[in-house]
Structure formats: C-alpha cells, structure tokens
Image (cartoon, rainbow, N blue to C red):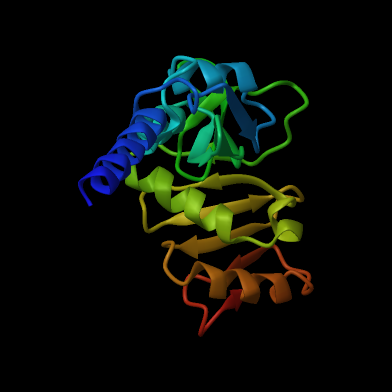
Length: 215
C-alpha cells in the first residue's frame, strides 16, 4: 500500500510538473484568425506570452483584454489548443460612418470609435453631431440608427445628423430627408421607411412609426 501510494503520488507530481512548470507543454505558437485590417504580428505582439510559457498557466482573460484593447478590434476570444498553441480569434470593428474631427475626416464604427483617416475612396454616411465621441449621446443615437438600417437603405444615406440624441435626421443621396427622432424602435422604423421609400416624396417622418408622414 505504501509503495502504491508513493508511486501514485510520484505520477501525479510528475504530471503536475509537466503541465504547470515544464516547457514541454509550453506555448510554441500563437494562431490568429478573423483579422483583415489588424496584422497578425500586431496581435501576437500584444498577446505578450513568452515562448515556452506553460500553456496551462497562461491567463486567457488577461490575454483577451490585451488583444481587445487594440483600436481595430471589437472583441476577442483566446483558447488553448494542446499541446502548445494559443488560438486568438478577433472580430474587427466595421466602419459605419465618417466624421470630421479636428480638420480630419475619420471613419467610426457603431460605437463611435475612431478607426483612422478615411481615404478618398471611402463611401460612408457623414456623421454630423456637435462632438463626435464614443461617450457622446448624440453620436451613439445617430450610429444606432445607421446600424439598424437594412443594407439597401443604408447605402442610400448621405449623412446622418443628430443635434441631440432625440432628433436624428437622415439625408439621402438624392436629397430626400427622413425625420427619425430618437433611436428607440429603430428596427421597426427601418422596416417602415423601407416601404415608404417606394413612394415619391421629398421628406418622410418615421419618428412615430405608428403614424408616419410623407410630404
């Protein structure tokens, strides 16, 4: 019995050392997927795990936070793949509009995060608010409206203006206007607007999707 106990303890101890302290099951590779605009080498740099670090001891949540802190990354997931691979999957931020900030024209995502200068070829709605920023309520309201639009309608929007969070207005590329109001019930308003656009008019008011106005 004593010998068996010693042998069992020795096996457990060896296994523990192998998994948690040895480089045998250490990190040998970092695989990155899901990125297009974010270079994989940049993701690997912020992962910050030294080669040979025991895979079992890698703090996956800490690595995820570091990757998610990259400007172009909306969310990230990190998993272990034995015997020695960290798998990092990223979801990149998608440009939704452009905004003019300090003399620059920048792209912004649905959360109002600035993604960088907009090139001449970028064709996205212009965001008109007093202070474009992720924490600005008018910015968030206007972008929530854009995000709710079907792709076919979104492609026809030239600009979205929001003097306040409750007074969003769309200007279409053919100069028609849409009074949207606040971002509440935006999916319902979007469905109503999609039908209304088949009716020739200069302006549409869907601020109350139960009672719409066409002029």
